[in-house]
Length: 390
Image (cartoon, rainbow, N blue to C red):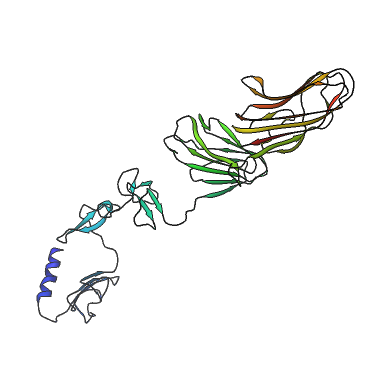
């Protein structure tokens, strides 16, 4: 090869118009070449008369060296993914892409410039989008869009790709949060917003020992929205509730969750009775059994009960009372009561009105407990229970 180059260099130094053709079809040579080497497949190497340009695979090179085809340079430094780069003297060698390309994003796996679209990346400085002078970790001069998913399946495991989740199914559903603190998914600061646009409940389960607001599972009632954030705790209250409420108000206005009525036939004379209100007008959480309300979500509630009773004249002086009771710490306890005493035998009507506002914990129960010492009939003819969540 050195001898071949030497011959070429000699030929180029002579001020001559002699032409040399080597290889196939030796009697045919381009008029613009000093030297032409042609292979049997018609590939050619030429040295042109025009500024002594060299062409490989072309008879008309337009640069000092033009190659039509692939070039192989093997000097021992070559390798997969490397780039060919020169030094200040023009001497070339193969170098890694990272040493040539200045990449502002770093790979979390190697802490060097990211080279793959699948790399997890980070940046130590502020990032600006349509903002050339970002003053926050992320400055966005414009709108943003996050993933919005419509879910109709009754079972769904939330992923690290989710943000807004809209449930529009036709039955009660169960959603499961991802593990927030394992090494493969440290979700500290991650936010989810779950919108229940259906007429059914969503049971939201945390993963393993993690909890949502100190509970292993929570219920999102129909037409309610829950927004939560991972606080980084390893166990216990891992997901903090940011807001919970109706889709229209996000909890800024009280929301009625239960409205039910008596059937007009219950007789509470001469004894103690748990009142039954079997007529349901509204039960957002499907939490009313007819006699007891199971608290679906920890929060502040207002409970109001009113009734009008028809009393049969006769007997002696009598009384009647109704308490709102809560079941907690393994026993029923009175939250608020209304007692009417010293009633005359001739009284043919009496009423009850009792209201209480209190904080209730998920799983506690509410009931109405009446007591009466009348020896004649005392029928709860009209009565309603309303529970409102704040």
